[in-house]
Image: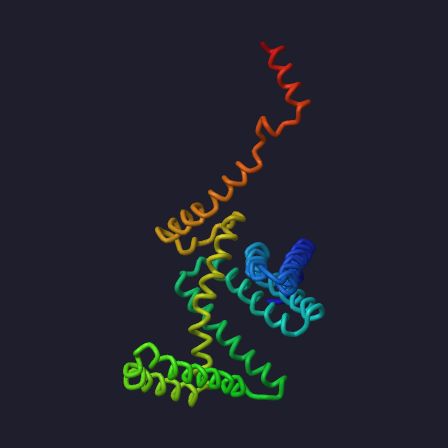
Length: 268
């Protein structure tokens, strides 16, 4: 519902949108490790929705997408749209404590629809059809089949491959390539499951660290195991860094040693 935003909502929305834009720019131009900052973009808009509601979150999304498109182009703006949409979606669902399975199912389905629609949109801009991308996948499939036909006799699996596995693979590939227009959506739907789960887990952990009371994911023994695994990995690194930078008596300059010795004599 349209309403007038308060000054605090405008300022906070603009600030969080700027933070998301900075993360996106770092992810775009950083050669290594940019994906870490890209994973933080949904968290920014999740926090904005939890604090100021859906309307303020959508205003922040519009600002972030517009500025990103102006700075880096339409491609980065499309990626920003998916990340911001994920953050707003998680903010709404986490605010009302939606069940994990339903949340993930809705997230995967809606994300697959957006990616599928984006594929058709970019194909339209490029003046081609999504079938062009399918043709490229078919060439990759043919190359892989030729490689397996060559490698199978070399390792003694020619009979298993040619008479058992290849007919199944060929039949499945023929079905997929002949029904590519809806199998493409199924492919997106399957591939997005681990991505949505990972984004949800990272966002859930960060939001709870910031003090928001949301339903913990995954919860129970699985969460305790993940926390213990993270602690097992991080604690030795922290301990090693502390021991590396811990000052020792041998590293103290000679003047400081003399002062310490004189102070200990006075105390005695």
